[in-house]
Length: 95
Image 1 (cartoon, helix red, strand yellow):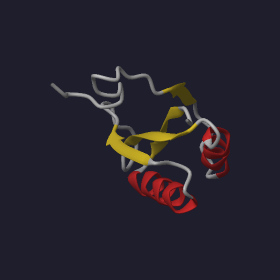
Image 2 (image 1 turned 90 degrees about the vertical axis):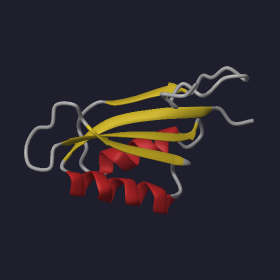
Image 3 (image 1 turned 60 degrees about the vertical axis):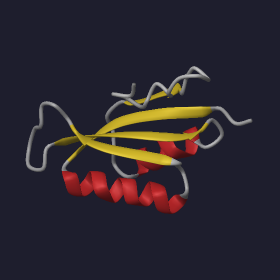
Image 4 (image 1 turned 120 degrees about the vertical axis):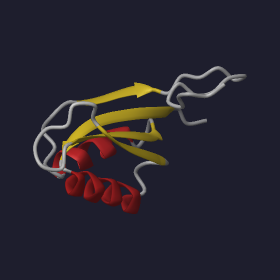
């Protein structure tokens, strides 16, 4: 069974964030994408945080895709850890 990886990065501007998310989905590099405005927006369009779920096998390709799109900031990747009887750690505000 494939291990899932959570990949997070921030993108300046809503159009760039949407274009990157669209490209990732079209390339089949993530099974889930969450786009959320950063708590401290900067510049026109703000700063957007992308949280992506991918497989361990596809994580390096996903990170390269993000870099190829011009993202030079930090990209954080970590395994998705969850309790079999609970919710995955990337789902928040769950009972």
